[in-house]
Length: 330
Image 1: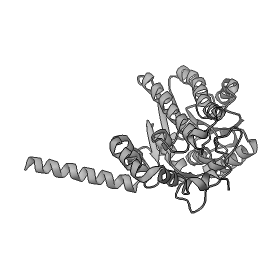
Image 2 (image 1 turned 60 degrees about the horizontal axis):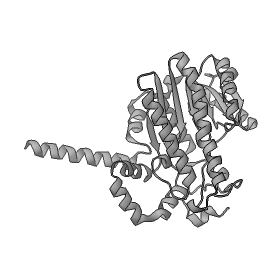
Image 3 (image 1 turned 90 degrees about the vertical axis):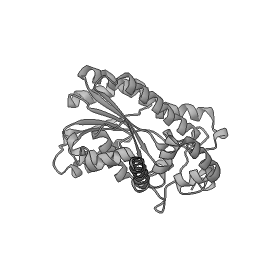
Image 4 (image 1 turned 120 degrees about the vertical axis):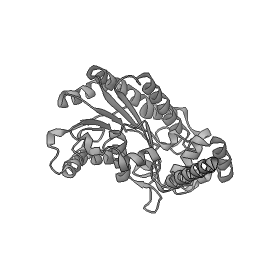
């Protein structure tokens, strides 16, 4: 009887867990935090430095935080777009934020020599930075064997080395104040090898290596490290995506009929992850989340499944179109 009860309990737990991974649009830790954890309103008055804040996930994370009265440093290359985002943030804050509570820093993150001076401007303006959110980056679509080495270098400069260098600058400040929080917008491609995006996938795996190492080194300090891993999201990322040729952009676009998470929802989940200081959070519509769970916890089963469904299916799951459609410009 005792073992029967245990067996029923294990079966029930497994069935419930499987059902929730299929219904939720994020990993179950983040789902539980959203339902029962700290609300992003607990971040009110904190200062968050966001790179790549003029569009996409960075823009909508700024909106999500502004709604809760979070002070912001918004960084990107396009000043006009930053001004637009700031105006929207002030509107969404409903009086919680004033003009001085949102600092705009036009900045090319690949100019690593400017990181220290730019970060110092934010510290001087607010007196402190509580969270650095590294969001700036670009995606890629290309056949692995056709990628030029210069593309690898350029993409790593943006997606990896700029992130690492700015974080090291921020760590000087966090170490001086005795606390801090570093977050990076990675991707589910940092967990699963995404086909036909070899350099991009490599850059995100590198980010996980760098920041998992940083977390372990500082586990006894008041420094928190969060990896945010969204799946397919409605943003303009395909327009700016790298291909396999240096200097070329994909110039493609997402369609309204695509199966993607909204940027607004992704931004809010990022805010939930930040306030609850998660270590790694996954986001995406079905079947992204169960697919990640299988790849991480049942790798042999995942390998067999990939052999059956093939890389083309994974590509279509990611971009809602075939490889041939996406590698040829709209």
